Image 1 (tube, rainbow, N blue to C red):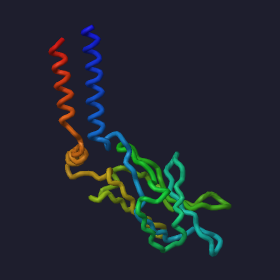
Image 2 (image 1 turned 45 degrees about the vertical axis):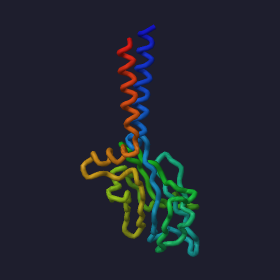
Image 3 (image 1 turned 30 degrees about the horizontal axis):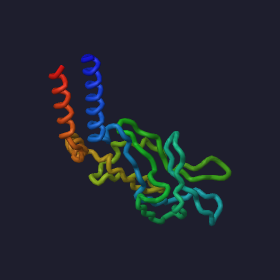
Image 4 (image 1 turned 180 degrees about the vertical axis):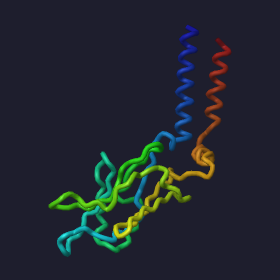
Length: 183
């Protein structure tokens, strides 16, 4: 009976510690949400005059996200991040995704503005912004608040742990110690 009780208490303790750790550091496991803050298209690839382009963003293996507001070139489009088509994608912390901007075509394959490896580490601005520019094609600004690196690596962990209730962890460890001492 006491061995079973000890085993159950250890399983519960491990589960509790893992739960607290994951709630303290969600950016280490959960992907970071990326939104489009602004976009300006410099060139449309339309063959027919007076036709509006259908511009979309897509990462390999994911659904395409049509940008319904983007209809003309040389117009600066600013987005709030609350649009129905947002967020654009989610980036895992350890892997990059092949993503790009495209323009739909009715007769031939879709035109590619640019494809690139979209990575968590691209977000080097302190406010979580990443600017992607391709000459004569587009200028886009992405926003990812959980992708922001720190100067020394440790500060980002400390920032993520700021909301964590660490006394819960100490309480769980003390409960486990007392249970072991009783056995």
